[in-house]
Amino acid sequence: MQYRKFGKTNIEVSTLGFGCMRFPCIPDGNINEEEAIKQLRTAIDNGVNYLDTAYVYHNGKSEVVLGKALKDGYREKVYIADKLPTWSAHVYEDFEKLLDKQLERLQVEFIDFYLIHALNKGSFEKVKDLGIYKFIDKALMDGKIKHIGFSFHDNIETFKTIVDDYNWEFCQIQLNYMDEFNQAGLEGLYYAAAKDLAVIIMEPLLGGKLANIPPEPIKELWDLSEKKRTPAEWALTWLWDKPEVTVILSGMNSMEQLTENINIAGTIKPNSLSKEEKELINKVKIKYTELTKVGCTGCNYCVDCPKGINIPNIFSIYNEAYMYNALNTCSTHYTNSIKKENNASACIECKKCEKICPQVLNITQHLKDAHRELTSI
Image (cartoon, rainbow, N blue to C red; front, top):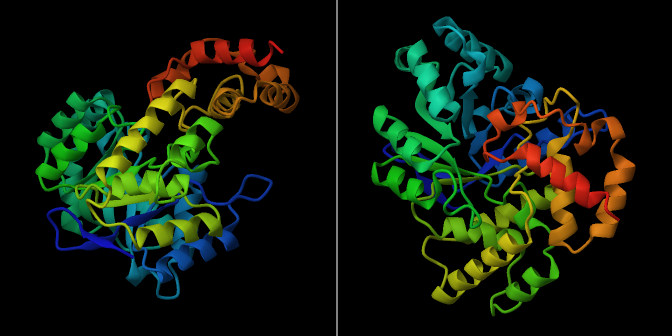
């Protein structure tokens, strides 16, 4: 396992972090606790020391399972990253109530790395008005948290404003070779690192899409390289190649994914990609852009739809139809697997989903397009 210095601190963290957003589940939707704990402990035994969860992951159960996994001496081997749900705070007192609830779920006395979750311009102004900095200072003084940062979903201008507004120690941004210029992007990575902030990367595989078996046009491009890598390895290498990246989070929900990522993390060092390899990745990016219909990462922020529409699932089917040249198969899947009352045509255009979409997608229009094209066969 490779390790990198955590910003302005003297802490060293594993370059691979375990994201606890996508634990393996049993058929009823609950976490497969035995398997999740096995995966977490296997990761720790192989050098992973950065574990990332949040108040809302798995409806609050992610923190509970992580806490169980850290029994038997495992707590002392790792750093826990957890996040304050800004949308659940309505008055100042809510901040401490939420933090205390997280400590209870995790069964720990303190959280190593605490993030203000999913900041954008609106939520940043809201928590500032509620006194977030007063809360942070108190939580640090009380020892309930050790280091403070934020996770981010907005544009580069807002990102810089937030970075410059407080003495943050780290930030978490979405970045992969498809998102160079989206949200904080590469500019945000370099801006934060220049201020000695540790930078944590989420969605390195774009919700797993960059790790899938690629469509033929993409496979043909990868085959041009003399050095053979899996699609996941290409995506992770592109990030680890940058010395400004501190930790890459991966939501590993199988032992196969875990093993592959651990093996990759143990070999990739900064500035290891050749000029030709960087050019090849850019060609792949261009080709993917040509094939993708909707830039949904499957983060599931939009799943609380009043009509019960599983938006990420529909967009996944829609994208696969074109990225994999499988419109007939995906059309059948869409028609047979989704009830009429919950398919894309059930959208009432309330746009509740659009207000919380980290990718700022025009979801209403995309649903119309998806339904039209997936039912045209």
